[in-house]
Length: 203
Image (cartoon, rainbow, N blue to C red; front, side):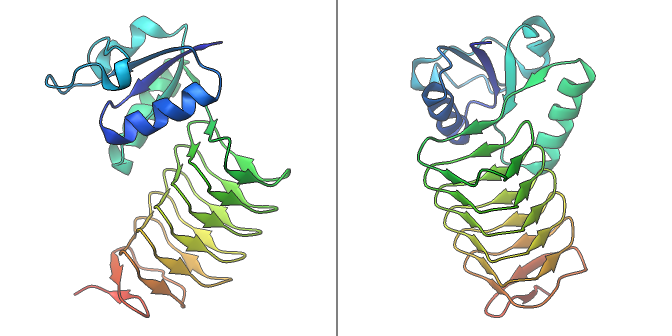
C-alpha cells in the first residue's frame, strides 16, 4: 500500500512525513485536532484524529511526542484493524537481525546494532544510538543524540532525553523521564524524572 495517514501534523509529524516520502509513500496526508495547522510540507490535513475510521484503506503512523497520547491513539487504530507502518530513514544503520515493531520510526543517522529490539510506537530520533542486545519497550522515545550502550533494557513509555547516555547492562523501568545530558550508570526501578551526572531522581 502506498498511502499513509500521519496522525499529528506538528514538527515531529513533518519529520515523519519526510521519512515516509523517502520510504516510497507518494500519497501522504495528516489528521490533527489543531485548527490552525495548514498543509505541513504541502501535504493535506484531512480532518480530526477521530476521522481515521474513514481512511482504513491507508497505512497509519502516530507522530505525537507524548507517549500516553501515542499509546491511546495507536490502541484505537489497532482496535479498528488499521495497518501500522514502520518507517526507517535511509541513512539509519540497522543491523540485519534488529527487530523494529510496527508503529515505530527510526530517524536519520540513528544506529540499531545487532540483536537489539524496539517495541511498538517508539521514536528512535535523529543520531541516537542503540547498541547490541538492547531491549526497548513500547512507546519509548530515545531522543536526538542519546546513546544506549550494550544490553540496556528500557521499560514502556520511558523518554530518554536529548544527549543522555545509558551505560551498558543497565535496566530502566517504565514511565521514566531521563533528562537532557543525564548519564545513567545504575539501574532505575522507580518511575520518575532523573537528571544529572550521574543521573539521580529529581526531588
